[in-house]
Image (cartoon, rainbow, N blue to C red; front, side, top):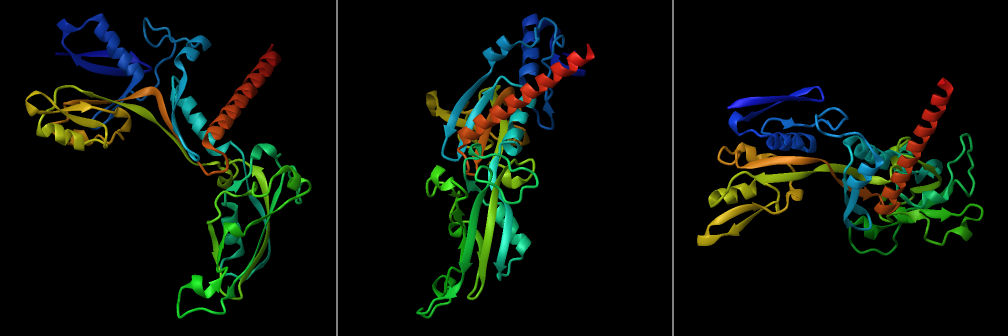
Length: 372
């Protein structure tokens, strides 16, 4: 037994192998695994770096070309609902996937409450806390139909501002049974987003239908009142991005993970098969009945694995499986706040990324022309 050493991207890798059995094809497979997969060990995660750079590996053409990129790159839709989207982005580097995630979080614009004019607030909530709560309410309004408000503009126009009014007063119910439930004792004691009323500015009433501009949910609790307490507030919604404030972020979460790949290195049967199944998330390992009624484990769906590495805690199982992740296969999950559907958010993020690329190329060309 010897250790093979080879260098890539400034790091030295060692693999144990028998000298008389090593072939060029085996070495090629070994390098392919290093290039394509992240390996999960008991106490370490290996091959986490990107190494597909020109000249990094002998006999590999890693020069970038649009033709090769178009051949490798693809997006597979997995599932989509009104507010959630899961899709696979295949054939890109982690830097591109992460840029896409960051754009979804902080650079796709939405409408949110920015200015709060409090005329009366006799509730127990301080003005600044109340204003902060109002700002975080997601507003159902297409930001693509509005412009950014100009700096210094305090009034706003129909093209860049939405106005809402909140006017609520808590009163005591006159005829109530013997009860201590506030819902029976008081009227309008819970101030929720259903109390927000849209006030059209200019010709907005002609552009938008009634009910089209509203909070995403009408049951978000804003404050609690008691008889005699009231709120009288006017609010301005403007267009903004999450980079400026989290209230403008269009997603509740946007995340990705690498596609897991699980390989059984040997046959696992009987009680060990059941034990192996319990080491993974439900649906990853299935047990089949084979000849003679024996139980045999097989990998059913690696995608469902959370890569907890629980299997490495068991001495009788740790050498039966190989855990890896595909380096250029990203599973994206996008959960919208409800302002826009997740598929629209993804398309908007692509547009932002394209605009950034165009800006970079334009500036690069201008700087190159200046240096000549």
